[in-house]
Image 1 (cartoon, rainbow, N blue to C red):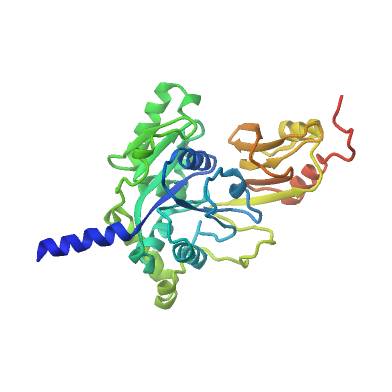
Image 2: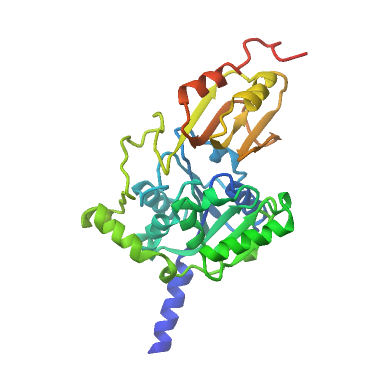
Amino acid sequence: MKDLSRASEISKEQEQIPVTIVTGFLGSGKTTLLNHILQNQKGIRTAVLVNEFGEIGIDNDLIVTTSEDMVELNNGCICCSINGELLEAVENIIEKKKEIDYIIVETTGLADPLPIAMTFIGSELKERTRLDSIITVIDAENFNNTFLESEVCKSQIINGDILVINKCDLIAEGKVKDLEDQISMIKKDPRILKSKHGEVPLPLLLSVGLFESDNLQTQQYSQKVSENISKEDADQGNYDHEHHHDHEHHHDHEHRHDIEGYTSLSFKSDGPFSLRKFQSFLDNQLPSSVFRAKGIIWFNESEKKYIFHLAGKRFTIDDSEWLDERKNQLVLIGKDLNHELIKKQLQSCVAKSKGEGFA
């Protein structure tokens, strides 16, 4: 009888779709890691769910996917709640796409992975999905004591089944060892992988079966739930996470949502930037309190489309071959941001004429 029971468990497990949650603080390289997975997987039909912190979506354009199954949870705020939108999105994927082999959820950099994991193991999704692992990406170059002051960052490390120390090529080997020692003080016996550009062998990341619900901080989590929501709300998968939303989840609002003092600012323009003016903005006007920025930009001086990334003090502007259209679309995340002033400064970077910016 025991053998039959075990066989039944194995059969059920085989029917469940494995899920990987990719988390990590702002600018750590989550999207880079996800692109590495999508570009190198063979014969795996993967659905990707992307969460955004801001009123316009960027990551959906920044992900190079070989699948049409891309779901953007724009303003879904799974960063702070077990949200109905995440639950509904996963259910829709399972129902509409019968041939899905794998699901990957990329969270915003300000996401606590606990409520996201609990969405899969504490709802009806547990019958259809199997949480395979939580992968936490860590920025080797910018990680410092400020990160350790963040409860979200600590939760990402503590609850990560796999910790990928990324950007190891940007710092000395001794500093990587110091970072490993710091992580070991936060998490007992961490499983650490080191990478540059998110390049990690896929067998070390996918279908690893590392997630164990007993290792989650479920006791603390359950206490927070009972303090903040009713049992009815809990059954429906809503979690307040110790702060309240004054906004509704629409795609056209100013996303002033505040997590540990961080807010996001979004900017769009129909016209191209003047390269000279945008460079001046980065050098002279961009506040040091902007910790993360990313976007799609184009310049009056070029026919190309560009991907813009800023993490800490480092930024990159790389041309893109896969983007279909040229547009300016930026999201900036930081503390104590003067939204109106920054938007005005960015607007002043928009070229007023075709010839502007040329020498």
